[in-house]
Length: 253
Image (cartoon, rainbow, N blue to C red; front, side, top):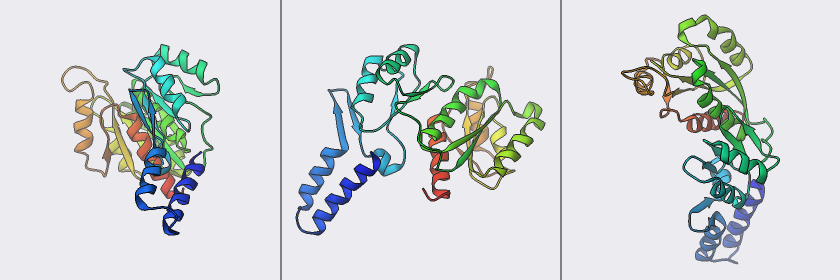
């Protein structure tokens, strides 16, 4: 589908260059093909995957299962659906029997995941409570054609747990790391000081009392002495997508 969209854009550009189509007519044609309207509540960006390398994403939270299904059915290519509840899951499984579902991430891809040809990333989580958002990041990268290498419960309370899986991921050629941590959010800064590829800190809304809900983790990551990029609290989608884009560029995809 992406190849077809890219071919259509190239066809329009060739027509403009050859004088067979005016610039205004070309612009109208591209606009018509790039937006898919779903009744009066959604407008899909049909060229997003071809343009940015990131698939169209539906945030299921706050939408009825019926609306999520309608949006997904209107898409011209498989979509990533996140923050699903039980009602969304049942409705989507009925509408897309071949969809790929990740229960821990509460996410689905409305088709089969693409081949893992776009490089590898590492996904680490400090504690078990951080795993669902870490899985959201990993699944997002997989939906973009990356292989996600995972290691969970490797936080600083027992830092010796980190070194073996980290060494393995580096040895397997991970091109970027997503490191999820709640509480004081230390783990991403440690990983960033040990590896020679980009690290994305993913603060998680776990913790107690003052500074809980991810605030302390976010502030700690933003003050890191090691070189670290940080996304917003619980933004697994953003972390996974950025890591995947890095990995894809690194392998020439």
